[in-house]
Amino acid sequence: MTPTISKIIWFAFMLAWAALRQQPGRHSRRTPVSYSGRDLRERVLMAASFTGLGIVPAVYAITHFPRFADYPYVPALTYLGVLVDAASLWLFYRTHHDLGKNWSVSLDLRERHTLVTTGVYARVRHPMYSAFWLMALAQLLLLPNWIAGPAGLVGFGILFFGRVGREEAMMMRAFGEDYRTYMRRTARVVPWIY
Image (tube, rainbow, N blue to C red; front, top):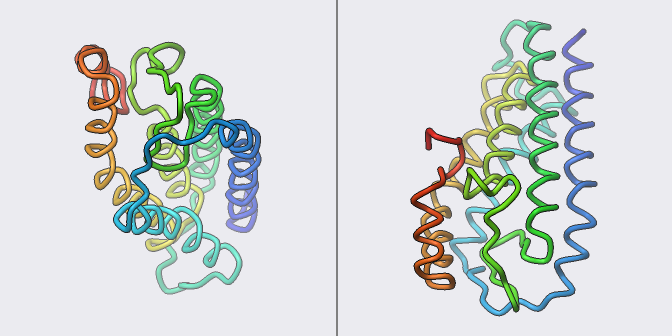
């Protein structure tokens, strides 16, 4: 295992993430949006996440910039990163599968939107966010650079903490007491913890 192989693995997982999102995206677009929260704030949050999980690590993987922030490569971290990224891909796939036509990349409610409380949603309200946290952790493990590695945690953290409260408020408006009951029996992103 080498740092170059670790970067290639990171790229391969990014391509797998993009491929997994294609079919659900086409499928959900067939159902019209009845409410959208895609305002300027949402666009800024999405840009922060994309920068940390996509742009910064891609620049590092391709150009090795910023080289000054490298730290010694530890092969064991790459192996752990592969396991974490594989878990994130599985969870990412399951959330799309369980959401079906309800899925959206942003704060949207679709016509005939339903409250999904089964599958990976039985214990966690936001398993898609859980998958992104795992993806960001895998990036940290795969890219031995003090800027590119943690950029995903920072970028996605900005999106998560800036959006999750608004998303839950939207769901409470849409589903009322059913969503409040669901909130009481589930965690946000880590079962039994948070």
